[in-house]
Image (tube, rainbow, N blue to C red; front, side):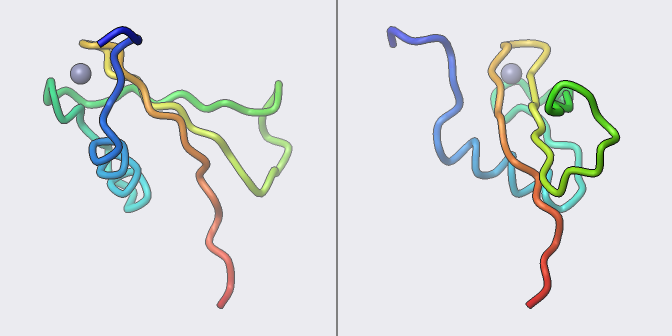
Length: 74
Ligand SMILES: [Zn+2]
């Protein structure tokens, strides 16, 4: 336990899946709703196909960064 606190891969995956379903994921450790942050490429509203989102637990400050992709065909 030398690094900053992080979620385990399983926890991260559960959070990503919940976010992908349009839910507001909660921290699996604290049970509080994670705070979303949009990370644009400097400014937003430019219609990028890919958006990055950062979810931070306000309690333990663990965070998950992920790409939110738009649905593609096929
Ligand atoms: Zn937490």
